[in-house]
Amino acid sequence: MTERRPNSWLAAVALGMVLHGPALAAPAAKPTALPTLQLAVVSVADDARYAPRRADKRWPGQSTGRLNTAARLAIEDAQLELQEAGLQLKLRDAQADNGALLPATLQALQQAQVPYWLLDLPDALMPQAVAAAQQAGALAINASSALDSLRAQCGHTTLHTYPSQSMLADALAQYLAAKTWKQVLVLQGPQAADTLLAQAWARASKRYGLKTTDSKTFKLSGDPRERDAANPKLLTAERSHEVVAVWDSEGEFARALPYATQWPRPVLGSNGLTALAWHPQWDRYGGPQLNRRFVKLAQRPMTGQDWAAWVGVKSLVTAWVAAPKATPTQVATRLRSGQVQVDGFKGVPLGFRAWDGQLRQPLLLGHADGVTATAPLDGVLHPVDTLDTLGVDEKESPCKKP
Image 1 (tube, rainbow, N blue to C red):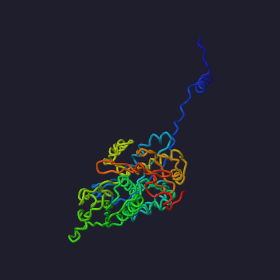
Image 2 (cartoon, one colour; image 1 turned 90 degrees about the vertical axis):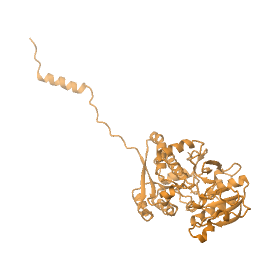
Image 3 (cartoon, rainbow, N blue to C red; image 1 turned 180 degrees about the vertical axis):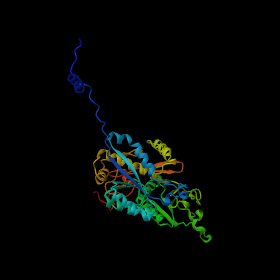
Image 4 (cartoon, helix red, strand yellow; image 1 turned 120 degrees about the vertical axis):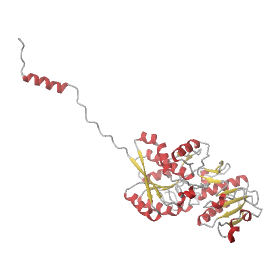
């Protein structure tokens, strides 16, 4: 006869299965958001530098495309470094419709507490953007302007990855001094920007013992009475010079000058042999790989401004990974202290000057088809760092170390 067990026994067995059976799966934890750094690329939509009519001409040393692409490439290159540190970098486009609306865009960045700004602006708008960044407590990276006056503002949270006018002029002057080509005819345009270029050249010429045989102003004009003001043969008729230095911020006159002079003389400055932050034919220290990656992303060659944006973001990532909780001021101080150095694919580690925030860097002396030399030239000496032979040295600068 089968024994019948009470319902209470069945309940006990069921309870035991619950207590001693497999544990129930816990709810999946939500992924923790990675610490994020915001970087804004500041620009204006009507920037004349990027007007198709000008950009398509690709004057030597001038930008041919906006710097967002170079910043994106730098972030792509830094992904492994950021992932290992558990960090991420977010790129933000801060573009004003025009210069008049730029203050509102800068104010919006300040209100949103965006801590890092990459400045892609024409020279006329750079000073107000730098001042606004200082007021906002943001770190600003100047990746497009060569103005010496910006370096003299001495903002401790401003970094300059694009070379200054003085640096570019010193590089060419060193080359002429090394070649012992010291008799120079100077041709400059009528624009205010041309005057600044000529002033930087005059300083560099004096520094490296060059002699100006004559200085003339050219003028492009549709007036037949002024045709001679842009005639290369007439402007270069005197024979005592060994080299022609042309300073033309617009680029139109300089473009036609090589091989159009009265006498067989090399041309340098705004055309011919030019001093550059980067060259699309630079074939050393990883340059070809960087150029190929950029062309694949941007569908155009990398310019000096692109390189300056790329190395600026790379420097920022390097400093941030080392100190993720640092404020923009602390990051700037760290970069300018010499504690952080980056590989800019130019053969030497790069770092920032403590007094004016300028990136120390070799410059490429090139022409349309390639690179002839790099500056500083062999034999140029400096008591601290030979890279400081390019541009305003510490004793010459109005800025002091923070």
